[in-house]
Image (cartoon, rainbow over all chains, first blue to last red; front, top):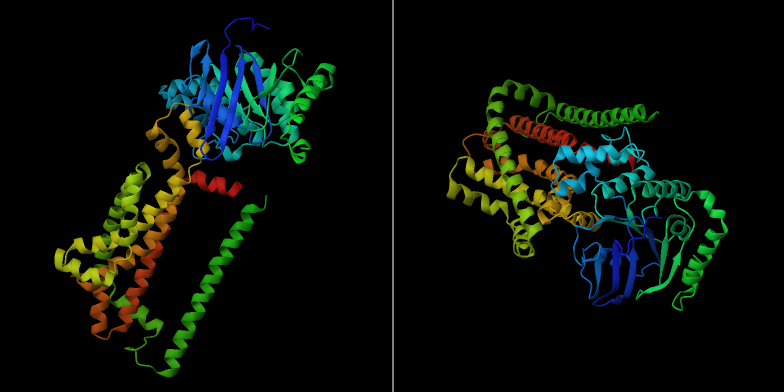
Length: 264
Length: 262
């Protein structure tokens, strides 16, 4: 792996955030991602992962801590991260091509150039021929690929993916995960993924940050050493099973974890 | 596969049942008038309404045009004013707090009381009619927009903000297009009120128009012509409603395509 550079692409240090009423949500969260790395954040529901993403994306200000991008202070800056939300949020009034150029349009890229840049990615995203289609005509998997295209075409240093495959059926999800592993390695994107799915995290990641329940901090960091991109064949590898076991152990050790949550 | 023929058959069935219902009503009415021998100034037969209406078609047409004009001008004014109000409300909490209650209050104004005053203030010309039409129709338009703006998903706003969009861009790219279906719902409600509002305004004082025509015919005991004018009014309303629906299909085809899927 070529991630030998000393400055991380994304360096999140000791983020703290509390809301009036709900209390502390983030209680000192630190994580990092080197260029081209794929890291995952996994934790129980409501453990503040969305808050973490909003702060990293620059949409919310932390109470304490900082975000650095390539060594420079980037807390509150929105220009560094491209964000892919849980729902695809493709606009029904725009064609797929016009949906994917949305970010470029907002950033003032001329329409022709924006369309050319997005259109060039359509074949690799399995969307060739659907440029002029409207979102309702696409399958769930295709919609998620279009949403990812809209994210990465912005050319920002870091991609934040918030449970991108949560709404898909299990088979489509596995297919999408395999595909994402391939294109991520191919394009060298730096990705931070939030997920509830242990297998997804292990299949895709170089490193997994396991969060505690709220107020969230990082309970364990699990490195996955298997070579990437991985295929579903990796699911049976001893190293895969070992990583999975360690993530699960970290998740279930939580004293605040209820029996129902642990059994999920 | 069979979706389209089934839909077409359902549509045909609906038209047929409405037609049968109206026909039955007319036959009962006609029979009653003929059997009872009731005087046509009290209740004219449908056939008489039709023949007399046709005989005076030039006069009815001449009175319909101003009504149509007032409806159109008032309606367009309502859309402009309603849209402006809605955008102001969406952008400013202060405007929302002050303007929204005032808008609701405007709907509590008894038109029966205000319409004659409008004639006193603005005369027998176009202005008082346009004001009444606009007063009646701008409310559903405004509420349609405001509800539509509010329906924008928080996630979509966050997504746009993460792309670096400012408030105006979020409005233009998400809130405005997303509000179009709700706006058109308001528009369809508004257009059904519009014609009646114009006629009401004419009733109070006008030189020409279906409203004043009805009043004159009533005064000369031409009940048949009053009913003929009512029929023309109904046809006009339905035509304008249909026209609105057609415009809606043309402007937001994606809304219908999306709805059919889900």
